[in-house]
Image 1 (cartoon, helix red, strand yellow):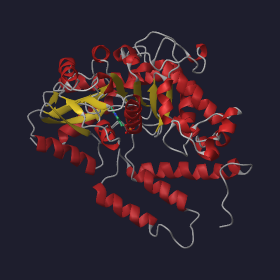
Image 2 (cartoon, protein in one colour):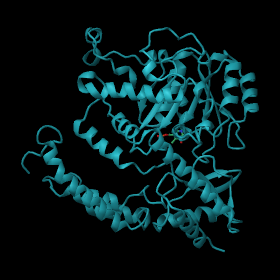
Image 3 (spheres, rainbow, N blue to C red):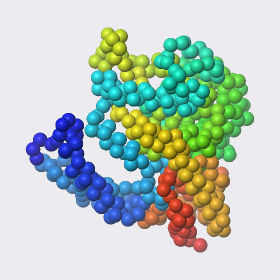
Image 4 (tube, rainbow, N blue to C red):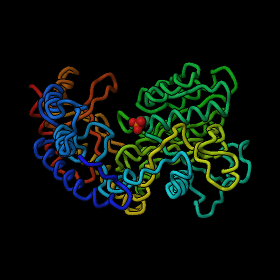
Length: 480
Ligand SMILES: *Cc1c(COP(=O)(O)O)cnc(C)c1O
């Protein structure tokens, strides 16, 4: 090969156009070869195909057709969230417009660790993250707000004063939850996490990573954090109240349940505890006029985790941590002379290093900004309404079927069910058979001491016939 072309610069578009054709063709060929929601044959068959296609991963001499072969191989071996029968996880089919914007992000390759690597991207990030934070901390809109001037560091978030909430861009809920606990630790030495047994595993892991004391895990037998049990825990815990950080969940990963947010916020206020809400899944309900009320109380949290690669239809990664009081972010301030020298900052170059623990950082905000602007709140809200309606429809089909048991009516877009009177081993085997045959991708969750099949519906294009087909597959694979 002569010197390989670059993605940006004058030759960029010219070089990319035929490559895009190749990639799009390879995606189509791979999908057709797969023929279902995921490849048949299980891990061994997939591994064999990958190894056969790749061969020597670092050959001495390159192959100009590698992009076609490898993309085709990846598509053939993909679990495709755009297939209605791929419904295990909070793994969404990305919007075409967001994916196209992500291509531009890759081509331009801005890096959000200094202004001189990302002049427009850094301003776009500031603008869009403020707007998303305002969506949570309703009452003030970005356009009404100036950059932080007043010192609000000592006031409780309950105080009804103008604020300048913002959000940090993260790689997802895991990093957002870590940052939330870090900010809590820096706000109150001796910070200790109090969370429900239903909380995401990344919270207790973050407590471990940050060297916090052993978390207090409050039982959540009904799948949501029980306010009476939380009250008891907060009353009995020794030490200064302000050091406790309660993590509530808006959209549990297993069942899509929402903790009683206002009750929890009241308890945190009464006990002087800090509140973090993990809305990695449920945060998307904010876009829906119909479902937004379910998040009532979210605005009382000090920090909120959002994941737009779930109910936001973004390619990963598209995480956010909304922070009510921007003074909390002082804890992240960091100095590296080559990125934010004092004289540069004084001369007006934005200091970006304090917006993340990462250094080089992709402009994930571009695809998010393009999506918000292309669809608007109405367009996103419609997608949310559609997947929630699909969950209701699937629950109705399950209830109407004598061979199935429904866990509970769905709260967001997760439906848990099991073949009636099947053992846990049978439920597990049905799921694994569907997986290895490449017919359907369902998740699993243990609730009420039983194993359930989990359908997490995130595909707005799913039709009622797809849901019926999913149930038929489960039925057909359940031994009688
Ligand atoms: C998905 C999820 C997370 C983790 O998010 P990642 O983007 O996978 O890091 C955290 N909390 C909840 C409630 C989630 O559903």
